[in-house]
Image (cartoon, rainbow, N blue to C red; front, side, top):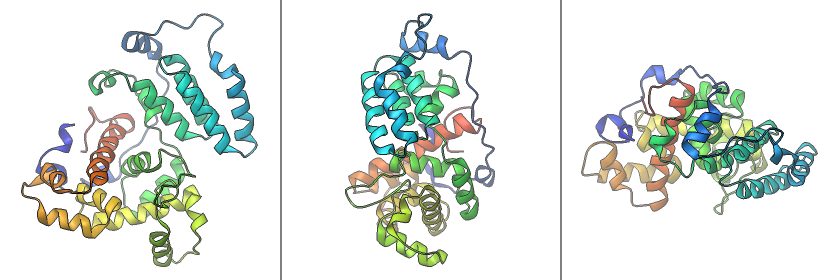
Length: 294
């Protein structure tokens, strides 16, 4: 994305961005026409609408999700998403059904699978309601409260969560990072002390706590780096000391120079992905004319 290049990209986000008006796109009547044109899918035959939602695996997953067994439900639905690859109408149905069950990681997985075969330029022709399946905005109240409390743009927080956990509240990484914002236990304990709240590692698996802790930590990095979202995002992933070292080492000014200075492969991938997510979130939910950071 052009927004990820040049010195201006590292400038602090403008104040209006911190109070972006967020509107969830309504379902677009042109979805089926776009699916046919862009993805080459045949229209759904009369009586076959929602056939995947009558599949025994989906019905079992729905029962498990409502019975408090989301992990098993996720596994079943992810299998269905894999089976539905190349069948756009089924992927849309699965995404929306998963969202209704509160399984937003499956919603996003289905949305990503739907868009995986087309270019970003082709994605721009998609109805925003279709793009929102890949870039959902779940836990909106908890996310909005955390973003507002610590002054982090709501959609930037959503972009971070999409990359960190893909919206799975129970996500645990190989390094022991937990929850929506993938906070490690030692950092979580420090944040709990700073906020004056009781601490338990299990709290990171609660969406409200994870979002609040992640927003606090991200806000701290944004303040440390004077609003430079590239350095702050790198610091979220690799620590403030590493981000400062890359800032000091960069030979070219601006975002491209900072990215070239990053010597951790994971962080070099992480930063542009989070900020590309943010650009798309602004396009889908804040009415930006194109995906861009500002």
